[in-house]
Image (cartoon, rainbow, N blue to C red; front, side):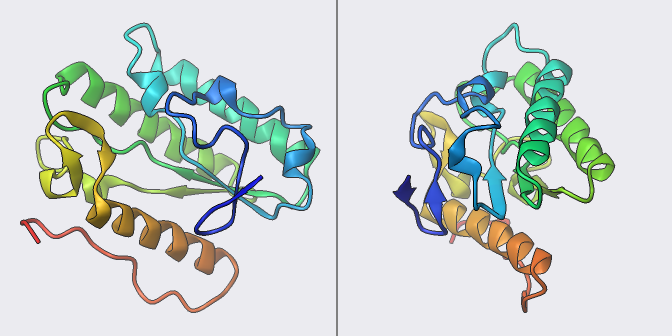
Length: 179
């Protein structure tokens, strides 16, 4: 596994189009000796017009249930899907993201012993799009700029530190204006 900023990255984690089905099998040795798994899935899946957010949550639930059963003691942090912004934004994608995040958060409350939901609403504007000052650009509706990445990393770090009983400080909040 490659070494990332906060820990090892799963094989394929750097793939641009990774989807829930591209993750290693829950019984894969890549999960052995791993205490925390941070999953950010859904954006690429939800871009596909035929994708049903509720079905995607079922697939995510199935994966989480299997990986935690195969690897007792593993805790999964599920990031809410980030809002999108720019030319490719429409009501359908906002609705899909909202539905997926709602069901994902609900799923985490049912699997509370082995999952934590990391809310991404702080990245949203009132119209449900990604705050422009956190986006990498108008032509890239999915990816965060440096400020956005720092905000996301602080929220993940807060969740990890909370889980392990370490001092947390406060997670960063997105400002409403330009830096």
